[in-house]
Every structure is written in structure tokens, then in C-alpha cells.
Image (spheres, rainbow over the protein chains, first blue to last red):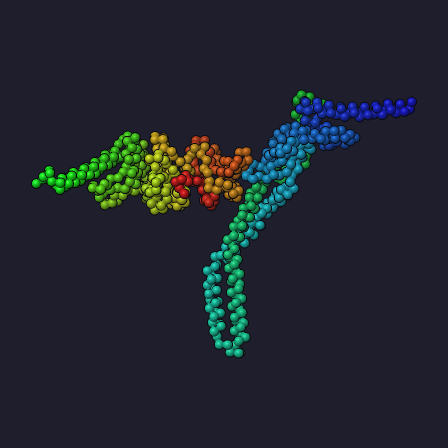
Length: 292
Length: 313
């Protein structure tokens, strides 16, 4: 008897559990069929939805039902992306998205030449996953603005100075050639001077001094010989750095045009989930149905 | 006294007759020449003009027995032809022919350019035939013309060297533009009226014109340099259509694209210029936008627009 009762209640519990899942899935299905993205989002993460959108503290107990659809996230993300990207287009007009595989999106910053791959768009969680290296470069270049500097200004100046020195070294070739001729003559004179015992020490020192100078000039000649190649290499490097500065400048300008400053941009990113879902509520109020 | 039966005198009279015939034919050639000259100088019919020029282009005036001590060179008939062709289209005042005293040699000036350029034709001596129109002081051959083959080819290298580099400091862009327009008009008449095959090259203002650049596989750094230079002048180089290459809008409705025209197989990077009225060529861009000119000239090794390789090499 007891066993049977236990059996029956176990079946009841399981039936209920399955019913909950079925109910969850059919609610989700209906939401998709009705194009009710807001409800889809709510079903995907009820805890977050209640916390961030409804701002109620009394969170429902975690029911794990959303795990049922974990393995169809790509399709859900693909479905939800349409409206989300439309919305983002208004607020972040400088971001471009590329669905490189079903439901997964790359973010590109801007439409200028060689714009940067800036990270990924997490559609399910309504979140930008910025590439940290790229993001920090942007943040840093905002910080440098107060000093009227660009990210690569210092480095470009350093390389330019080096190129200038190299150019000077090349230009001074005739001067060095002159010096060498003179030094060689001195060397000849030195070797022809009578080597009286009491002079020999002095002559030897003088000779060494001339040889040292000649060696130094030969070193500079060798550097000058490679200077052309190095300057070319420096030019290429400066191009890469100026290009990056140019891109960062466009990015800063875009953010300023849309958000005034970097802090507002970051604040918007923080509240993106709530902002987006509230915008969906706003829309569905005048729309087909208003549940809740 | 002539004795018809004497074989010796027979030979003499025969020789005289032959001689006479040779002179007659030489004079006939001369007469034919004067007719063609009349035609070239006086006709008001463009067809006759082209016909006369084509015949005069390789006309042999001298024969073994009749030679003419005062002659213009064949190249000069081309200059006459060019002047007359423009004249028949009411453009005669845009060129000035000049001949030096006691010397049968013509030169030409483009009226807008004046004495800052003196032009003549140089006959191509190879089997190809035809002539090159060149600026005498610099030796730059601006175009090639072949009347027999009805061919006309502009030379991007010479146009750039002469008008974009050499005359840049001394001649205003508008003057350069109207000078070059004379040459373009001449080519246009040949194309439109006589079906010549004309390559306008960097002077072609049609939107569909692809200007192929010398480095078919253009190094990315060249485009990067334009990106940086453009930003400094408040222009933005954007991604090209479908992510292929780059685009820059220089004025409302005036865009330059640089992209790979052969996405499969061997790359072929080209420049294009789009404007609503199809009046702007790559040459105009070089004249109008200093930073585009600087970029082109600094990267000329890679970017120089290709001219007909069979003619200009």
C-alpha cells in the first residue's frame, strides 16, 4: 500500500516535472511564433530578467528549465539577432556585424579602410564581448587625449628621430671620406718620423690615436651603408603606427558623436540588456498582446 | 642625223624615251602630291581630309629622276592634319602651327599652353608604323597615332610626367585641363567620326573605365598610405563594395575606388572614378586634389596607370 502510494506520488512528481518542461517549451514556442522576443529573453534567463528588468528582489527559484534549449542556442541567437541588431544600429551606428556562423557574430568597428575586428556580439545575453587588446587601446587613446597625444605619438617620434640620425649619417659620408684621407696622411707622416728612442713612446701614442679615429669612422661608414634599408623599414613601421592612430581617431570620433564620451559609452554597454528589453516592452504595449 | 636602222642610235633614243617616261612619272608623283596637299590644306570635307592625310603619311615624293629639294617631313603632314581636323570642328584656334624661316619643319603649340610646350610628331621607324605626338623639350610622347590601323593611344606615363609633374609648378590646373582637352577632342573626333580605336587612358572620364595600375598585385601598404593621407585632409577612405578594396568620396557624387578587378586567378588592381556626369577622369583627380596627386606620385612605381604595352614599353 505504502509502496504503491509512494510509486504513485513518484509518478506524479515526475509527471509534473515533465509537464513543467513541456509547458516551458510550448511557452517558448508560442513566444517565437508570436515574434515576442521579450518573452523569449525572459524565458532564457528568468532570474536576470526579474532582477534587471522588473527590478524585483524576490527572484524565482532557479528552475534550470532554460538548460533545455542550451543546444539550440545558435538557432535562438540567429532568430533573436534580427531585432537586436536593428536596435543596436540606432544606438551604436558605428558597429557592423558579421554572422560568421549560425548565431555567432563578429563586431567590426566602423566602415573605414581596414576597420578593426572589435569582438563578438553575444545575442542571447545581449552583451558585447569586446576584444580586450583592441578595447584597451581605445580606452588608452581616450586617456591620452587630455595630453593632446595619440596612442603611438611617442613611438612615431622615436622612430622618426632615428631615421633622421641615419639620414645625417648618410649625408655626412663626404665629410668622413675627407677625414679619412687626412688621417691616413697623418699616419704616413707618423711612420716616416725619425724614431729617436726618446720620441718613440709619443709617436706610438699618436699612431694609436689616429688608428682609433679611423676605426670609428669605418664603423660609421658601415652604419651609413645599412641606413637606407633601415630608414625604409622605419617608414613601414611608422605607416603601421599612423594607420592605427588614424583608426583610433575615427573610433573616438564615432563614440563622441553617439555618446559624448567614453564613460557614457561604457555606461550604455553596462545597461544594454535592461535597456533593450525595456524597449521591447515599450513596443509590445502597443502591439499584439500585453501579458503580465 | 638619226638613222632608224642604226642599232647604236636606236639605243640612244630608247634611253631618252625611258628617261622621259621616268621624269613624267616623277612629275606625276609631284602633281599627285600637290593635289593631296591641296586636299589636306583646303578641303572642308572631313572624309577627304582623313583620306589625304592617310595617303600623305607614307608618301614617297622623290623618285630616281625627280627629286624635290624643299620638302616637309611626313611627320609635318600629321600636324597639318591635326590642325585641319580641329578646324573642321570649329576648334582650329586651339592649336598654332609654326614654321621656322628657311626651314621646312613645322611645330605646334597648344593655344592655352602657349610657349610652355612645343609639339611635333615623330615617325615610328619600326614595322608598326604610325607616329608619336611629343613635346620637343622633354621628349614626352603623349599619344600614338596610326592612320592605317585607325589606332590612337594615350600614354599615361608621358601625360603624368609632363602635365602633373613638370608643368605643375608653372601652369595652373585649369590651363593644363584646357590644353589636354584639345588632344582629347582630336582623339574623340577620330573615334566618333571614323571609328578609330582610341584608348583615352587616364583622360577617360567614363565611369566604367578601369585604370589598371602597374603593380597588378598591389601591396596593401599603398592603400594604407592613402588612408592615412586622406584622414589628414579630412577625407575618409572606407571599405570598398563587398569588402573588396577601398573607396574615397572626394566630393558629393565624386568617388574613387581602388580594388582587385579579378577576384579569381591573377589579381588585377584597378582605379576607377565615378561621377554623376561622367566628366571626371583620373587625370582630373590628379589635377584637382593635391593629396591624391601626392599619393599617386609617391607610389608611382606601384600605381602608374598602364598604357598600351604594345606601343609604350
